[in-house]
Length: 95
Image 1 (cartoon, helix red, strand yellow):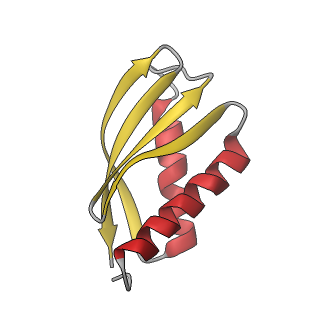
Image 2 (tube, rainbow, N blue to C red):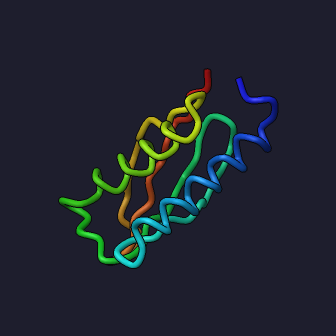
Image 3 (tube, rainbow, N blue to C red):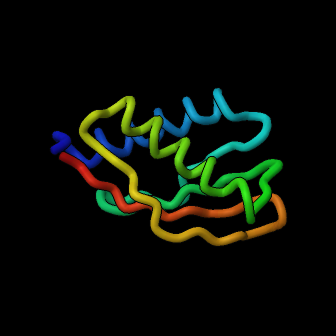
């Protein structure tokens, strides 16, 4: 387990910053909601909601797993919030 919820939130924020460095300008991610067991991330950019969503979601989850080794993101729900943006909910699993 992580020593604190703030350590986990800091890790998630670091992963999102790294994700944005490697995926921008095509897509950028922004943390919308954080709890120790649930996060929502908004993805904005040249997004094809039908075909590209899983690549973006899996990319973020893989980066967290690679950086942490102690936490995983399990995709839950997605929803399109505008023509160029969608939100993804993740369940957070910590070891």
